[in-house]
Image 1 (cartoon, rainbow, N blue to C red):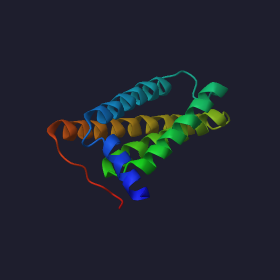
Image 2: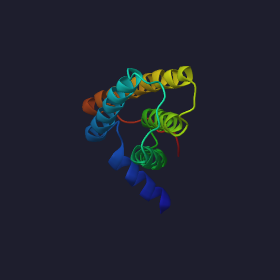
Image 3: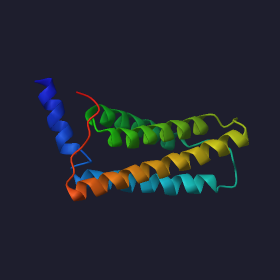
Length: 140
């Protein structure tokens, strides 16, 4: 019974066959790119993130983690893992303002690279969904 619920949930949300899900992945990835680019270009390498931002990062990480359990396609999991890693790094640099500037700048550059990777994989998902290709599952 649980397997049927999980499969049904996956089929509804699958980015490889549902172009709407793929488009949401792509739009979120594009937003991550804009935020990472702005952070990379900011004047101060260290700053303390406001509590509301930290709460949003934590909430987004929980949602991405939940989605990772629901979706079983490899490309979807890559996008979600990149987003989860990006949020984790941003959360860490926001919580620990005493990190050296070079560490923060490196983390921001890596965050931008992960966002670009997530956008490319999301674009591939969207192309697959629009062409009607089926997904490649990782799990059972």
